[in-house]
Length: 225
Image 1 (tube, one colour):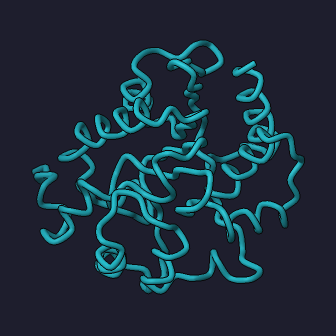
Image 2 (tube, rainbow, N blue to C red):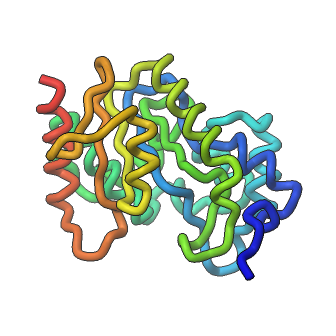
């Protein structure tokens, strides 16, 4: 028998599931939207700690990435010489390529540590689902708040006019179309006023090279010319 989606999250996480979108600031020029945030698999990273850290940050819809991670005790992405996080690494590669750079791994590492998803930075890094999971097969309520989250994202984009919105993950094409307000062209782009919306593969998709992300960043810049 299928499980009611609303029973999959502990009750105290419902507020986070509805109202926590991710990191950075709504009025940032560069937006990235994924299916949901990942989380550690060793048992030290847990939802209740993430919730408490978010509560300490006044339950803001978007918060500072480094500060949120520090508060729930997962600090390795923001150490002086951090490893690069698999999803963020390629999204940052795209962004730096968009800005005309040919980034090294150390360039990406420094951007992740100092700028990615920061409230004083240039990125808005948000998710369709407000609840993290180790992978998409982990049971979570991804349905109950989805429509209202999509509408909130649409309204924030309409208000703040980001330069681009990069949405990633093939399994969410229907949701990306709703956010963009219509179909994408053959290049997976759609113009929304002065904003370029684009759809990409998920950064951890098997067999995708670094060149894919570099070229996507360059194509985004060309699409605005």
